[in-house]
Amino acid sequence: MSERKQYARVVCYDGFSMSVQAHAGAYCTPRVDSAECYTEVEVGFPSETEPLLKQWAEDWRYPTQTVYSYVPSKVVVTVCAKHGGIVGGEVPPGVTFLESLK
Figure 1 (cartoon, rainbow, N blue to C red):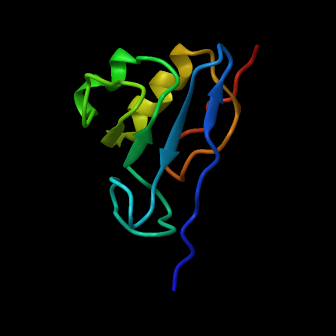
Figure 2 (spheres, rainbow, N blue to C red; figure 1 turned 180 degrees about the vertical axis):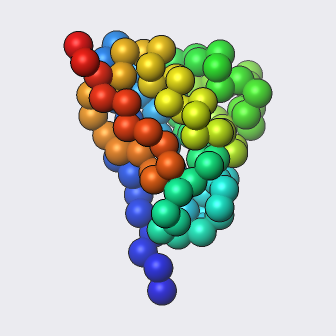
């Protein structure tokens, strides 16, 4: 049986944060546990409204209280860059860990 990894919430330089998950029970590609590379991931419950994620929202009326399904890994990297890079947390394989330089 594969281990289902729970990734620590990503925190960016400007304080923005979000959950970024990928495993057999998440909305990701591939939808398996412990893949070597995920091309799409599940984003959840961002700390503030992030327009770059809008098209993947389950319920855009509540942008900080919803899940974003099958978000391309490159979009997650772009969101992190927009918010100054990552200062804490983890991302699944296939999502570049864009560390803050600030």
